[in-house]
Length: 254
Image 1 (tube, rainbow, N blue to C red):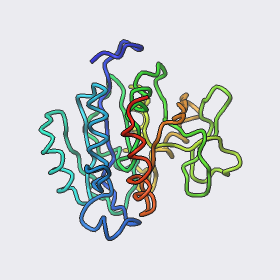
Image 2 (cartoon, rainbow, N blue to C red):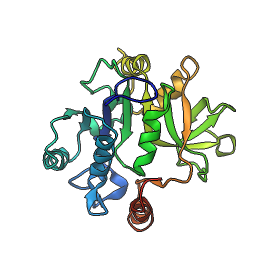
Image 3 (cartoon, rainbow, N blue to C red):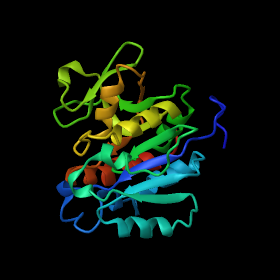
Image 4 (cartoon, helix red, strand yellow):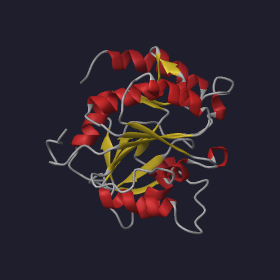
């Protein structure tokens, strides 16, 4: 499916779904948090449906904790474009290490990257894909920032200067959603960084790599506006996703 703005094919998608979700125990004892249901389906399935609706034909999931539940849910979709790669060290690593486990290399059309614990309005994904810039992160410019959020510091043209949980909330302008688009060269560069010999990437997040590369590569933030989304880390996030965010998403595309 051609992208009308960039005249390039829609890139494949990589979904990081290997983590244990310990803050949601006991619900995540035998499954990752992306398999928790909102609106009658797992969060992960909502993401996959949104990707398919945007014409993404190739989707790879990085699995680990509770992978059997993920594989079974995807098998029920009967979609040939879904593949899996395993993070064998999922219990002691974070998302950048999972990124390095992918088998999608190389990336002639770039790459979409999603954290599997994010419920979002599907229109946000369409806007991200249609954005003419290569390296773009969905960001909430209205978020109330604290210590826990992945914070973004922006220039006036929405170019990213910093992205880190360690950023002073008073110095940041946005929160990272965990849904991004990378150009071909940037995706390959990030993969090399994730797999670099001698580099300890075990505890690094994908935004850490973006923060490292931002001095050399232009990354931009695309505001989520008033469209609903939520990252699900805690039980109260799951309740809000079910009771507030999902009903807003059901109201239809904007």
